[in-house]
Picture 1: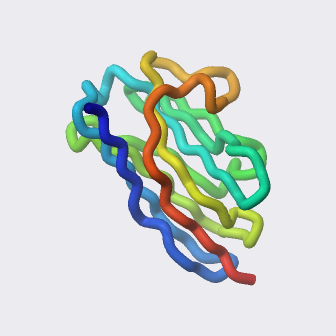
Picture 2: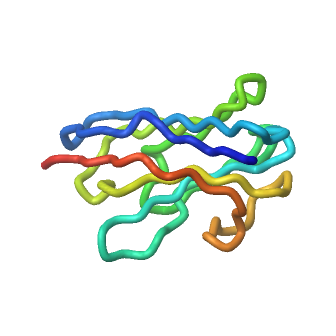
Length: 126
């Protein structure tokens, strides 16, 4: 059974940084593109970033470009999201997801990823 587990969330002041991690057991990790999504209370889950199987290509939502960096270590089966210059509007539950293809969709959408973690909470105080 595939298990996707996020960690690294927490409370941080505006302008601060956090690094999220995601491990995916029982996956041939480098057969999957990986993504990060987030969902704030009362809002739909939105795509934040996606990375191809090799890490050679990445995409970002406009709202996080220049502040967030997605990366992966296939040997460790781990996905990362480095979040800098955090804003209160970045507060949300952050989810890691796996996509059973090598590449990313033009825009990461919930329906294009098949395996999900339970999420890790990020709260940015002003």
